[in-house]
Image (cartoon, rainbow over all chains, first blue to last red; front, top):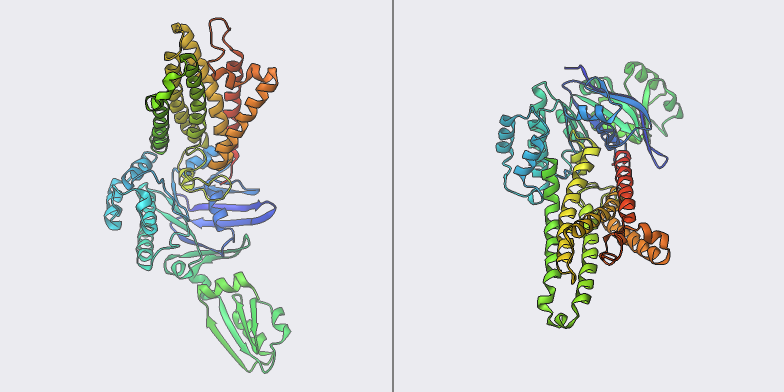
Length: 297
Length: 230
């Protein structure tokens, strides 16, 4: 198995002159549960569609499973080894659950009947029921079954839990974690459900307006980043914005909130020189990281 | 399995078309006033209905599933289950080949049935070679109608594909009525039984033109689908 499952270099895409993705460099290691985060319209779905060959990049290149994808033939070869769950979870409305499984099975010689049975039982999917009669949650479960039973090495999911109730969401997250724990499947999923990402992902990438703003191992990011909260007598001084090592600055009234991840102690020392009346340093959550990076000051 | 999927998504359209054709064929039984109409005029009406039904079948069957499995797919940005299809390890050319291929087969079955029925009710009997010649050119010329619909289905939502195809063929009909050169090669003239007579030579020019059209339109459809972004 390759160490790197997804590798993109300078991937760019525009729609009617409006950039959706700007020189995306992404590296997804094998076996990871990789959370791809961003606001609506940040470029998440565009990235997934590019990787699947549904749209073409304006610039840049990418590899899947160590093979450069540059033609339809190479994209088809890659698609034999991956599964995709789209955001709207649309399957064929003219098929039943059983027909959908039989149809999908035909394209994947390594189909695992044992996993098919396992997930049919786990999700309690009725074989004879027509797809339009399934709830959104059941459609997601069916798509997961189709993805897992084909023996995919890469599972790409676009907002897998959007519109699902908490119980179904929990079932799905548990199934994903179980799948990735086997070590044979890499899970790459886009989301803006930060709590879910924090619950199951080991790596995250945050993109905003088509640009990567954070990429790394989630635990490392959380241990590196610190929020420094400063309270001043009056309005926070303008010099705060120029302090070296500050990633983001937010001001509200007499309070300034800095986000820093390089040489945090030095940033704190420099901040003290500006005579705040109090200084507090806190660890950050993924939500804070996300909001600071996609909102800015 | 792609053929199976194509059949599942088309079968109700096919059944609807068979029902429509039977309705047209059985209409005289419900309308006794038709028996007063001379046989030659009845036959004229029948072959005209046959041409219209062939066109309807070609346009309607081409719309199923080529673009997506939704009514509003090509331009609305909502692609329904097409994203699932495109994530399978299958080329777009093959997807189009199977989808358009099944539609073409079903259209041909209906065209042959309708042409055979029209010939059977023709006042003056036709020889076997004449009948075969008519059926062959009817099939080829209907395929030109079908191919245009396939191309339109690659770029338009289904409702617009249907209306666009109807508009295009009405325009062809008007043009062929005005300009003899258009009439010479028009697939619509090739589908008609009117020039079919022992005294009039078989119109082969529309057949050749239709063959060229079918090739050109399907080739363009493949190119469009391969370049299409979802």
